[in-house]
Image (cartoon, rainbow, N blue to C red; front, side, top):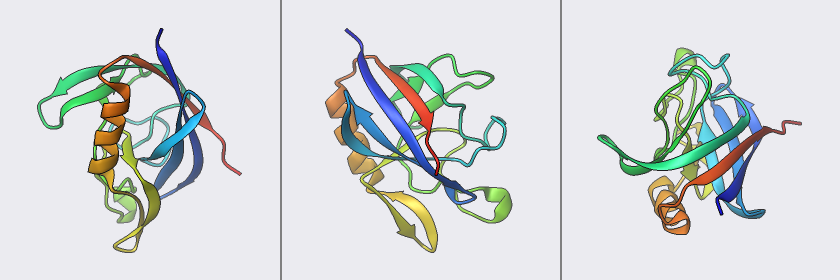
Length: 142
């Protein structure tokens, strides 16, 4: 049976979109994504929805999960990184549309970011053990 995870987006600004990941309804970690910019390739987070995630071999990031069938997008990965800001507004980013896990959301070098990303990615990879999983992304901004 495919495991289910939910990514609940709770904050978005030019510094990034931040969310909490629940695996089988239990909090696991935080995520950072780019701000919403109409799903434009390389500069926007992806649309809310449900995606199958499969383990792939990335030339740059090694074994990571890739979200399948993202509308008008390709190569949407879950990989390590801290910054997810809008470069056009002068913010740093380690993402071109991908999802970056972290143990917390905080400030790094005067910018909102996810922290301890490599450690959190390893924990996530260990938890999922290479198995496919279903990820539902929901926008829940206040």
